[in-house]
Amino acid sequence: HKELALVGSWDWDVTSTRKGLNIFEHNSETGHLEFISNDLPDVKVGSQLVVSNESIIYFVEEIRHTKERQYGGGGYVIAGKLNDENKLEVISYVKTLSPNPSGCVIDPKQNDMIVVHHTSTRNTATKLYRQPDGSIEQKIEYDDAAVVLFRLNEDGSIGQICDYDVHPPIDDKNSLL
Image 1 (cartoon, rainbow, N blue to C red):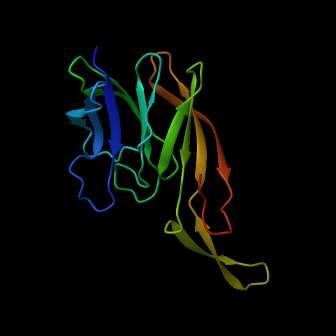
Image 2 (image 1 turned 45 degrees about the vertical axis):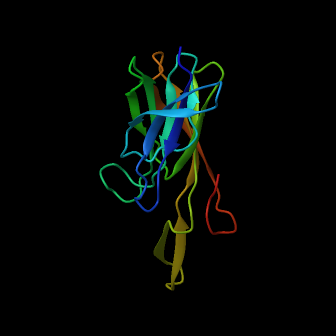
């Protein structure tokens, strides 16, 4: 039985050589980590990984856009299992509907998952509105930093979104969780 270390990695400036999910074998006597594999190298894997009782690994792809290159639209939450060769096999890849998912947690009964998100002041839209008196004003809007609740299916795959909560911006600037 190997003791493994799973490390999520991503970069802002496209210089990292080991983005994605990195798998290491841990030597408990020396503390040494030996690199085994790099899975999902095109995915910006958040550093928080959650493992269920059934050895399913849950993690987020911390991006603010969609895989279809639609700017905005949110990131993803992923579920997978390691096969006999310690390579990740993805069983679910689901949109979170809010930008920059930063972490996830599953409940003790492993029926539900919560995904939290963050935003920044760079994610703004300036909208114009005509007021009842005919004057025109602008309103600057920010992305929602949502807490999204997913059901987990019996096989551990990620089910549908069943609820969410959005936190108001802090100081009318941005939302952070």
